[in-house]
Length: 102
Image (cartoon, rainbow, N blue to C red):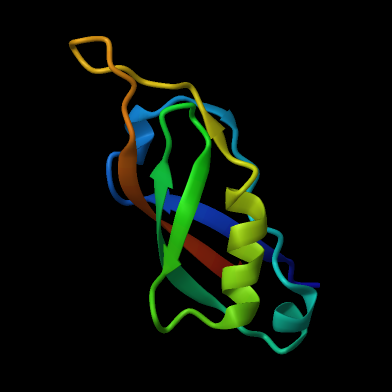
């Protein structure tokens, strides 16, 4: 039996942020049943408090995958960062999620 899986691949400086909570998206069962796969780019903001929002998906991302990604990303929380002057940092970042069936 092949198992569907979702994996994240850092794109833009996200690895420099320390994750406190970062669940991966759940592979949509209906997409898995239809053998739908893909790698989808998503852009979002890490706010000063470490929370995440302002999510934008690449235009070609099917709704079934963007909804799964959104459900995971809204739960993400990072350790807040500060600049050299001690001001809280807000950062726009990108990452890619790979959905595949092995």
